[in-house]
Image (cartoon, rainbow, N blue to C red; front, side, top):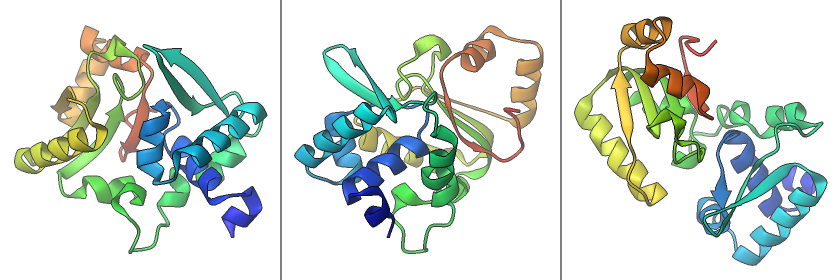
Length: 196
């Protein structure tokens, strides 16, 4: 039904990808892999979304990256429709990519906060790509990181810390934490409201 309302299955998948990852940039081949659609239809729909102003593009290192335009006048309503709120109501048979963030990180232990930055957002000020706050099972975490690196096709730099350590380091404004807070980031999971 959503495809009928928005014109095409590819466009809906693109909107879901961009609005579920609001601070993340993607290049065309990466998008094609993630949404499992033909490259020509992806390029056509990216062009349509660019013309309307829903997404923006930037050329870096001879690659054209696309991300959602958070200044678009209808950003909030589209975020409500296509963002993480819609994936949380996913059916049990949904793929791992469409699983709610809580489900994806449950196997790691008691994870309270997950932030993507660095390579995910093309902002290196943080010095890392992934921050996990909580009491994580290190074996499960290593397996998760290995799978995520394979899925993303790149080696990731990550840090794990307890909620108390995160709060303390943020309060004293240590350089590492300040870099993360100032960098462009995507908060994937925040069970304790640590980023508020």
